[in-house]
Image (tube, rainbow, N blue to C red; front, side, top):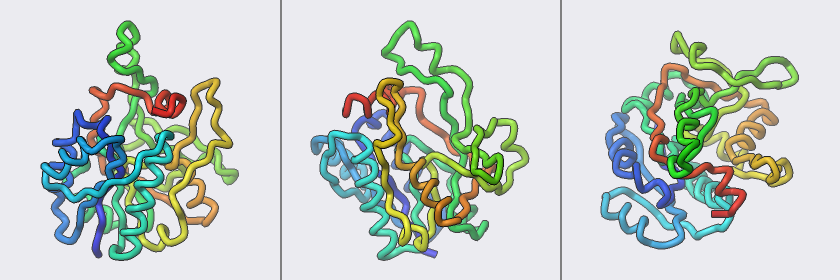
Amino acid sequence: MKVLVGSPVNEMYDYCIEEYVQALKSLTYPNYDILLVDNSKGDTFFNKLKSLNIPVIKDKWFEEPRDRQVSGRNILRKKAIENYDYFLNLDQDVIPPKDIIERFLSHKRRALTGIYFNYKQFTPKEVGSREGIRHGQLFPTIWAITNKKGNLRQVEEQELSPGRIVQVGLCGSGCLFIHKSILQKIIFRYSKENDDPSTNKFIFDDSYFCEDLTKLKIPIYADTSMICKHLIKKKKWIWTDLTNKNI
């Protein structure tokens, strides 16, 4: 099996780019290629990536952050359909186990996610007095299906043990392993129809990807032993804030 590994990337993640690039280059599976899609506004970050000797192409700039993410992922989707069996999307701040591809392939599933944690409440360091909020409770970014209607609930950390394969109804996009047959049926997308700017609520493409899988009756599984490092302590923004401001 041949695997494409990559993600849309942006200069806002410059703080962790060296660790991310090293992680991609250190994967132990013998048959994979790397490709990043830079959607930064200028060329400075693109040139830095080239200096790190990592395969990268330049995408155009979009004012809406979700447009940037979807455009980059669809470029990678097309590349994967043309030349690969699987696409492993690893967000720019997600550091996986080195043997992630071998372990994912061993499960013989078409859609899989690894585990990474996020803050239930997050405030960038620059906010000052609210800094403590960013060190609040962590949660794995997977949601369990609770009934036949497809209702979801947040999975708690203690539920991850023992490590195993479990079906989930929703997951983040940070560590997605997707077979080509799925990519041929689903285009990465988002919609503004369920946004609520007054409450800073914005729905991203990972939610719509999981929704499209559900509509096609394609299950998505989480490997709860596949714990990834999430480099968010130095992060200086909140995605929903950027979307609200189109930064």
